[in-house]
Image (tube, rainbow, N blue to C red; front, side, top):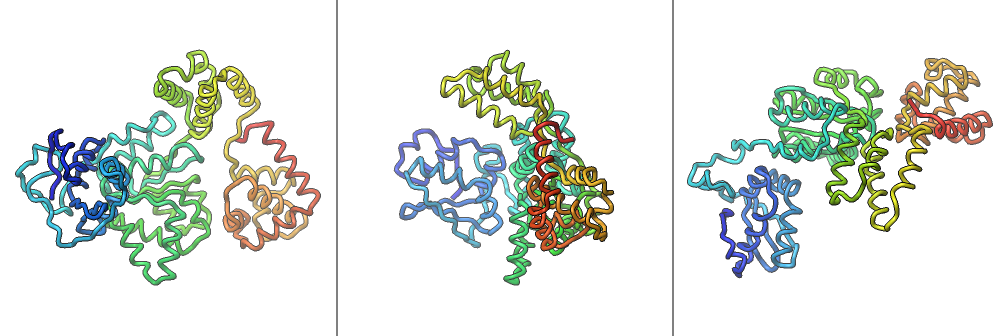
Amino acid sequence: MILKTYSLNLIRMSNVVDAFELEIKQSKLSKTDKYWLDQVDFKFEDKNLNIHVRSEFIKSSIEKKLYEKIKDSYKKVTGFDDCVFILDKNMKIPDSEIFFDDKYENSEVEAIETIKVEPDFSTFDDLFVGGPNNLAVTAAKSVVSSPGKRFNPLFIYGPPGVGKTFLLKTIERSHHSSFYIDSESFLDSYIRGIKNKDIDVFKSKIRSVDILLVDDIQFFMGKKGVSEELFHTINYFLNNEKSVVLVSDQKPERLLGFPERLVSRILNGLVTDIEKPDDEMFLKVLKKANKDHGGYLLSGEEISKLKNLKINSFRDINGIINKVLLNKQTGKSNNEYINELISEKSEGYLEAIKPEYILNYVSKVFQVDKDLIVSKNRSSNVNESRKLFANLARNHTDLSLNQIGIYLGGRSHSTVLSYIEKSKSSPIVIKEANNFNNSLALKEVG
């Protein structure tokens, strides 16, 4: 059955499915949402809402984009939230009417594989766009508009908390044939596919869409197998005029341990960064938060004070807004908190610690050239510098032991672990590690 335009008096009908269809129609639906719902046949059976679909691809798309909305609407109507997918390969495709769109009534509809669904660019309205991310957002819209035509692959890098993942998920929401996967899920699926000897299932899943979005690929550093799979996946998308968007906190040239041909393939596309929010963007977020809370969250004077703070990420901004919101809820004044915040920031606000910064610090402390630290030299002074680097990298970055080993000239994770353990009993390493920790409170990391 195809969802149709129901009048308001249907809300009184006993037919559960009709009432449900009316409820979901009245929820906020994009054009893409309406398209996917038109591929579904809803049936009610023993308190369950059976969601009939004709392919795994449609099931996957509905699960990703609309399942929670379907469950919420069904629960509002019946009080139950048991929704079950049923694969029905004999299910007919709608032949006369496009969901909720009267202008398509009685028109002939092509098979689902050939129907063109326009991108939903309204999803980009949720982004705060400015100098720090304008190029990345523009490129992302181009990918959504014409997958595989320009900026392929698109590589976006930047420090944590600046909105890289949010941009990827915005792309996913805006295009009906897109798939987001983080590095951990990609790696787990790849390993599981190898172990179960069904790697082709994983390949088919991620290659079945027009836009593939892979997050945090820096965690593939030093992992040869999955890096090679990523290379072949990118090649597949390029050869089939589909788009790949990759995100990392490192520039492509800094992805140590990646196959050279993979880095070359990335550099052949568009590489752009997202920087930390600037003053203008910070002000936009503050004003929106204030508006969302009736204009009473912050005074004009408080906004003027806050907008000049040095901010490194949207996480910083969200933390500030949450604290101000808590103050409002508990009846506390914002003045004391804001003044304290300004005082702290004036002493230097810390950015995420980069391995390069640690390597420069260690080189300076031990008066050892950086090239010597990553070499095969085994002198006492050089070994101590490696212990300090391993100690600081482990405590101040999210690098794995393998990745730390790559920064130390390709040493194994067991060697790095040995450096870390020995650093705990080395007086000079303990002293310099403490000096490093103290310095973080006194100056900004550049």
